[in-house]
Image (cartoon, rainbow, N blue to C red; front, top):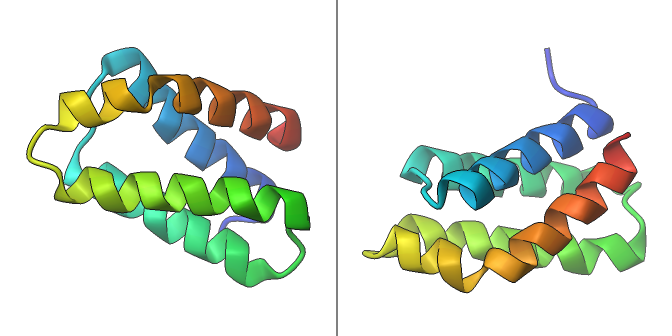
Length: 93
């Protein structure tokens, strides 16, 4: 059963929160971030202003799965992670 938009936003928020709090992420998590963002963007009902945020999160996922230094990748995005988590929290509540 596919997840609806609210559940996808919550999943994305949970993944980003885990990265933020653990300062670690797996390739599978980055791939899940990418898949979730792609699905949300394909929906077509996402607000235009939020699409840019989702594209940034997608890029984070792409770079994360290809990095040799995952801890540094997360640390370099720590401020952005907090911002994305806050935005997703507002939308998915």
